[in-house]
Image 1: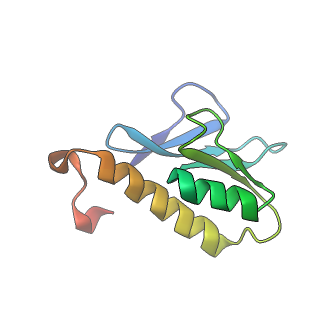
Image 2: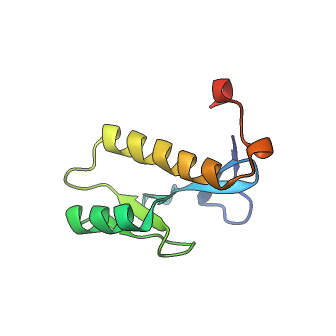
Length: 103
């Protein structure tokens, strides 16, 4: 896993290999996390949580953006980050996937 600010100062981009799985916005006026998600799960999350929206910066069908709000807990964020990471890893060729002990 790696992260950095490749093009925009207020976006911290997290990658596994060369694939993005999370973008963290550290703009104090708009703190959001953008994650990869299965489209059906993303739709369910948007329906259930007011502060889960279509993903910014990337494909709207496969990405969600999450802001602070009712029901958004640290546990939920942790689960969604892990799911995003796994969804991205599963799209990678097996030879390029990280070893299990380094996740």
